[in-house]
Length: 509
Image (cartoon, rainbow, N blue to C red; front, side, top):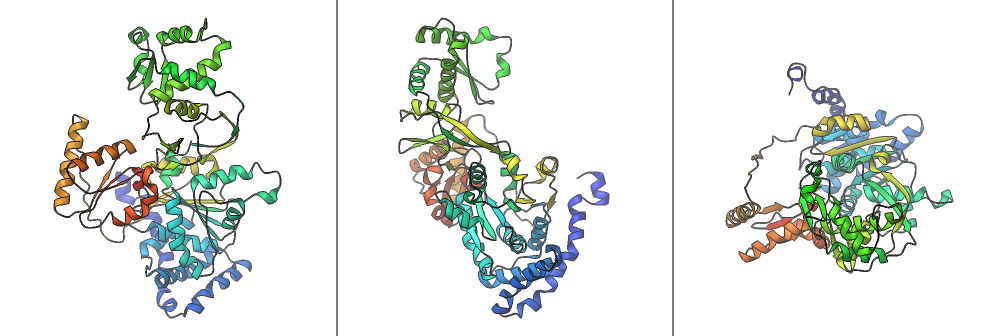
């Protein structure tokens, strides 16, 4: 904290002081609303809507509306929002980002803010990082919202247009960023307005906002149509790529002014940039293999494109890290969430190159019909807010790109968890040996253990090592996503050992 902040208080502290009287108004209604019958509590919703219709604003009814949903949550779920959760809901309503620590009940905070804004009838989107969270949150929080007379929808993969339209027409809609973004693109391709499924973007509450608005900000959502180019080139380029010798380097800068040092290799894999570049020797081999005089000639650009994608498929893209093979299809693994991205394909022919590499049917290359980035999509909302446990580190980006303030919400109770320093090992083998010993030590005491890994491949490596030591455990990765609810439910039990990818890193306490 800077000297200025220590003397005058941080921005969050000053904003929390401004919110305090508003929070207190909500808490002051507690006893009165406790005394209301269910019928009287439910009657508050039409009363609020009538007041809005007569010219009052959401800010005018905020204390009463939040007191209403607070009491409803207690009656329906047995969970009464704490004062700090009321502060969080007010921050969301104001179109800001609430930084809340893990386990502080962000899902309930979103529900409170969604109720207030859902009264407008213009729609509230609660955006999550995966279908599992969208479904579980809409099921649980939907009970509270429906109790108070609001309609609740949930957008999941596989719904038809009528089901999607009905869900978007609800007062509150739970969905993933991908589903909402693709529905927006599809709506922009329809001929008749009646075929659209979405309404005008009104208010979004983005869960794990740093993941969606920062980590995936420039990720393009692309709707593609099937092209008509032959797939033969991909199979021929794949066979050629298998004859080549690669070298892997950390950064391509190492290549500058020393091309001759790579003359023994056919292509260079740049780990940091996740790219592969053919060398002079590789070009010469290609010219001989395909019987062309000059690979760099304009007439051979299509061939060069296929060769480049083939070496990227072999050198850069790795099975059980970047993708999995399931039912003779290549399915992308989302690097941010660790989940399978059903129906998504790499563009520019990379997906076809991977299909050729893995020996599955090569489908026709697609052509882009519509595209948008998450950054551009979420700026379409009239009001945008979000929650995460780690927003302060990206505070400047949120303010600069989205004009969003970040407010750090205090915890309900003092944090007793101790965060240890990182332990660094000289070799990967030594690191995994130490992990296994740590798991064994905790397991013998009956402590539940959760081990986070960076990929499916690493999670399965640890699983094999545990099997060899006779330790019963569960593996949670994209291959076993159907068992997610069951695995997560058991992870905190006595002696449980769970190996997980970053699938378990968002929305899981």
